[in-house]
Length: 132
Image 1 (cartoon, rainbow, N blue to C red):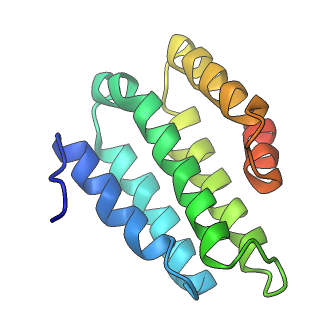
Image 2 (cartoon, one colour):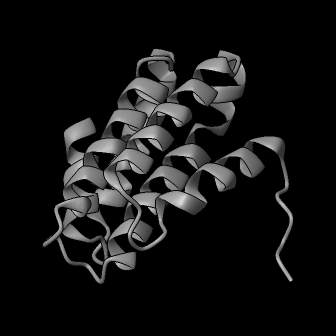
């Protein structure tokens, strides 16, 4: 039995992340989901976005990690690189550009924590560092 989302924002993030992490998801699907994520974040009030920014950063990085795992960690198809670009775009355009200075500092702290984790995959670390 699936656990229900605890908030509408969590539910929307789960809907957007599910197809992104599916093995074999095309570049077009991932690009569309990244644009949809930016649009959803753009439709949120800044206060809501700021309040949920840590969760949203974790969700986006989880999407990147899930996409890499779905491909067995392989970049042979080039999809791993594109997934990183799509998530990087969502982080930058969807969150980073809309947050206040305080929110951007919190986002940078969260990204640094994810990047410095020992178990952090290389692709995830590179995306985190590119957004700092």
